[in-house]
Image (cartoon, rainbow, N blue to C red; front, side, top):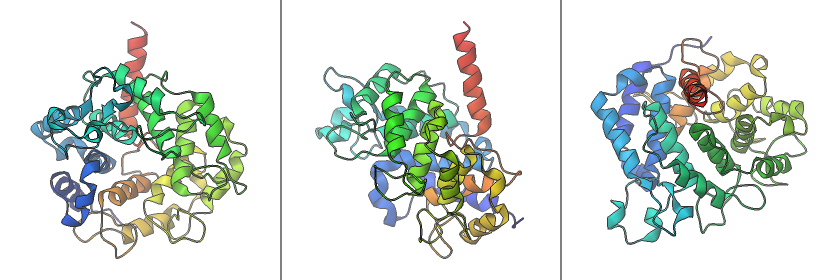
Amino acid sequence: MAGDLAVDKHVRYFRYALNMLPSSMAQLDATRMTLGHLCLVGLAALGQLDTALSADERRGMVDWIYEQQVQPTGDNAAYCGFRGGSLFGPHEACSYAASNMANVAATYSALATLVLLGDDLQRVNRRAVIAALRHMQLPSGTFAPHPGTTESDPRFIYCACAISTLLDDWSGVDRDRATEFIASCVGVDGGLSQAPLQESHGGHLYCCIASLHLMGRLDALPDRSRTLRWALMRAGTGYQGRVNKPADVCYSFWVGAAVEMLGGHEMVDDDELSKFTFQCEGAYGGVSKCPGAKPDPLHSALGIVGLGFFRPELPRMSPALLLPEDVVERLTLARQAASST
């Protein structure tokens, strides 16, 4: 196996990123919810989440997340959920309508982050979140991220499926239509794309496979073995996201997690893939997309999660939910207890 992960450096990196990011990332401020989610995923993947944050820090993060919840006010059912950050200030101070608009991706990140922080989700307006999902599903079966956009693809199907799983309520998703759309995105090479007849892509592969997994519909793939073959063929020095593209460490999760869900764990060269991740480690912590590039929260978190699929000393993360498997088990037990009362 390849060498040891610089755990202490990575913990410091994620802690710094939770508090301050370089000016070059200022344009990401509106997606602060996702950045925080990724930092906590990274700490969890290192097995350090319980010790890296104080109780006061956890409470502060939980309170900030709930401050971003968009509540129903009569005519904004499609706008409910969680917004991406506090860029525009408190809700009541915002005169710009879009600043008080939730989106499916931020809602997923908010819920997953609350779960990572040990919150019981009792302050989530579940009915409003699920109702907003119904508004976001399009006739084709895919989802838009928020009202008033032409953007739609499997990323938001995944977010809707993850939200439904975390809240244990699938009434906001038409699973038949979502499954049909995903099946239509399978290419002749077995890969999956953002829409029918487009190029197969590792990120959309993950979103489609994880969505089917969460819906219990992996059997809807037209040719599972061909899809697994496409994913396995992306492995070289590291995983690539598309044919004839260089390796990128984030695909150790996007493609690697799909391989896990498709049952291909024993078919990859884990030593070679691990070496690539170690080559991408930053001198002061964090992981970059490729050797020599600057680390960022996304590549750091997903690179470490992907590494954990073959490193027994790291906590096992759920490939479908990007949460520690013991947390997923806790959620499952809580649902079973609730359903039996």
